[in-house]
Length: 344
Image (cartoon, rainbow, N blue to C red; front, side, top):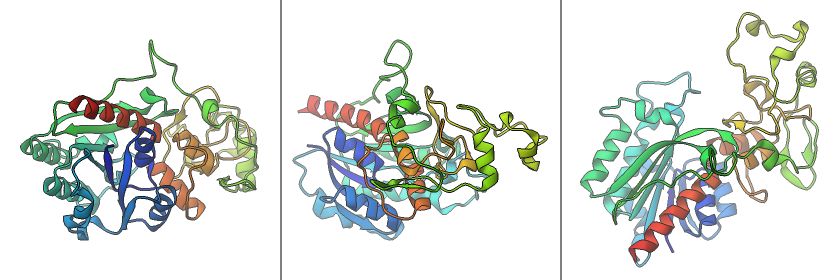
């Protein structure tokens, strides 16, 4: 069974998908305490290090990699905010842009059989000729890895979101390719919001489902309750009467997703770390007068409905928004498993 080392694990979206694919999650690492608690809750058998990778020696995982009887996979989905279009306050020397280098130290010292990286598409545009991705690719070439790198819509793998991700998959064993799409033209239809949250029990703004603390919707101000009550399924602020308009939107036609409702039979917009906030995107429930709950956001990220999250509501939303969609990871994990079996 392939052993997975999940660096920058967050709450465990990648590990969740890889576990569903039949891989063995043996190690996780993240700096965030709430994400660490979530990961530990859902992967109790894995060794976990909560701390800054920049301060860690690569020997921290040596006892876990000594046994090479099974293939080893390193996942390095570093925090993506420095590369994201959503980050309007990028700094030229943001310390997070070098986290891929920190991951490369572990790759160089332990030479895993497989490498998986996922990030936002903007990552490959940061100093294209000598940026972090280019430097990493040059390193793995020197280490005799074969790789495939593409920008992939999550829709291709059944994730109900218009979300594109940069994905790199590498192997030291033999040439490897990312899996082909399972959904789209001439394939399965794209997943929709209804497919993933249509059966969850109704709740009101500010309410918590008594059977699931994660099915918790943020409260809304009285004026936002009026705004969402006048918004049809799939609609937005263009449907409001003038007395509900915000001053900043009166002469502005952009940012049309803000204060929008999702549509039942379409994919959701790409989820962000503010995915439960009505005022931060098209995160209004399709018919109930509230923003989507944390559980609904997790389901739209394709987490299992019994996946447990730790932390305050805002922290849970951040963990969900930052996660790799498990269903996407599952398809990639299955392709890695198939590749490994062909090598035996």
